[in-house]
Length: 241
Image 1 (tube, helix red, strand yellow):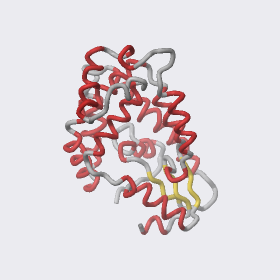
Image 2: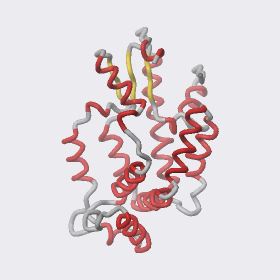
Image 3: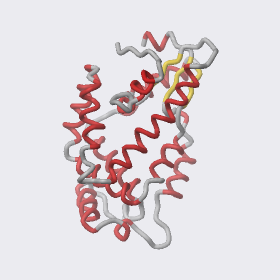
Image 4: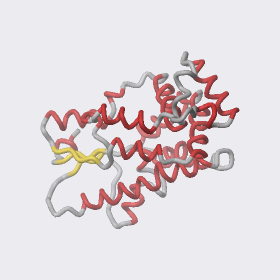
């Protein structure tokens, strides 16, 4: 809170408070739905479809409601359903907390990404990666309480090594079982972080004497390929409080 009060500009991955919901909805309709008579059952392996069907049956959702969607969007829905089990209040997120404060005081807000760029990344995955990530979300569904509690404890204590171990390292360890998860990882973290790093450098090298308060998801900050290490490698000084 003290650092925020001393800042001139807020920087976030995405300003969720100003999303054009109609534009996002139109993008989803155009890119998340099958066309030409195709559907999920026809496009993914039979055993994976059976697992998806069983999971949505548990959730009280019929496959008639799901079959029209591609695997990447089905994965999102399973992920959101698993989070609902945790009784999480989205409005209490760190980014939304400070976004609301920034808008109240008419503070300038910069975005590192856009809603469509994030969705475009998901839609660009080839089928094998979409299918393996769908299996990954199914596998994690039952363990979501334990996984989240472990992540929360690591985050609260500032244990970056543990955060990396239980998230990114654990994901990469599944390469033999789910080969496509590596492609997902590199697109979701490695490639995105390189693009974010370029934007952060523009901010850091700006000649205007502004103080920037930057909020980025914890997964992007940890590990040897995370933003903190990338910034250190570029010669910037970082300090964890």
